[in-house]
Image (cartoon, rainbow, N blue to C red; front, side, top):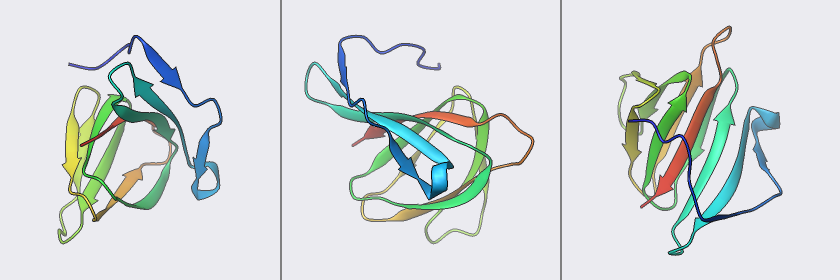
Length: 108
């Protein structure tokens, strides 16, 4: 199931812009203090480092990702998610000519 709406949140209005604008996100805080980010990745191949563990939920578009230590690219589309360990990294790519990858990053 794809998350379409998140109620009762506080939004950081200044965007986080990474990789020369290829990834743009906003931080959100839920009423219970849980933090997440909501963003979009435009066509590109990028590498992200993690502090905390993350769950990347795709809400629109698609991407391929590769976790640290793996040689396998895995596709993720709307309604799917993947987990990334804390203190790690992952590669993500969105193919040129395809819809941008829209996501919610759930911090564990």
